[in-house]
Image (cartoon, rainbow, N blue to C red; front, side, top):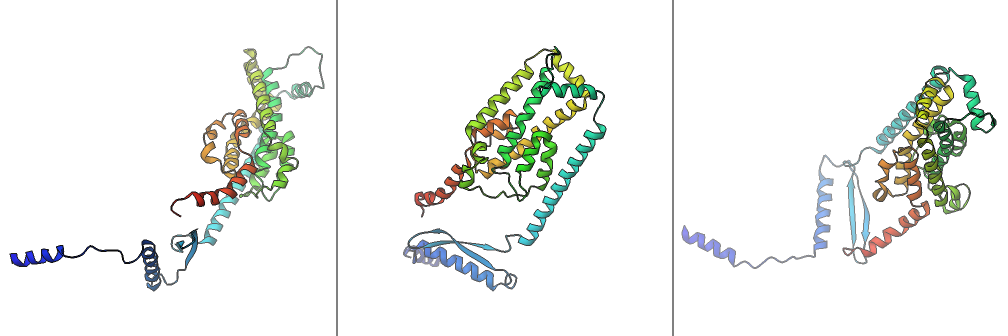
Length: 325
């Protein structure tokens, strides 16, 4: 028995080392071919179709990636699910819009209608010289509400567009605030159509994409907020009393809060559309800061033309610089 064991061990030690009979690439291709043939011959997978398409290309060989229908969901079912989610969000937003309108017209406090009219005339500079000092927080809120539509215009018109045009809602938001924008939020259906270079050279995109516009908006908003915050200590108490009794101030304050709440979503949408999420994701928590956060993002974001140019040049550059190709 011992001799047979030695004989076997000697036979194994005398075997020559194995050498690959084919190149590595040929072995990989044959292995993939055998895998496809085995799956196609299986009685359970005969109905599946395998779609192969080239991923990388060299002068002497091709690399293919094969996808099975088992790994992908039914495209028709996925489309139906996406449409149902879109309709659900639209219905919820329309319901929110209707509830807000009902609250503003029927449930909001309305104890001082004459005073509201007087405040409106003062803020529009239609009444002056009577010696009455306006509340600084109210004045700051009034002017900051005039800048919010500009911020939303810079977020919606370039990258938040849809089949429904956004510009009528943005224009109406100068008068109606979030109450004019909510219908567009409900009708919005992504993805947004791409922006051409010709559109970027024309008004209004050439102004909305300008860093000068973003910088002026940020500086103006910062100055208005500082003016409202740095004031008399009694202004906050007075403003709270106005909020509890005045419909004009109550509805305007609610408008400001809702615009601040929706802004981070549109910042995220704009960021992902420009392919800037990896570098600018730190601005998402900053966008929660009312007005100043979205304005800072608008100043730092790349232009749409830069992102489109990088998309067209990156695939060729990466392919030429990859040492494995």
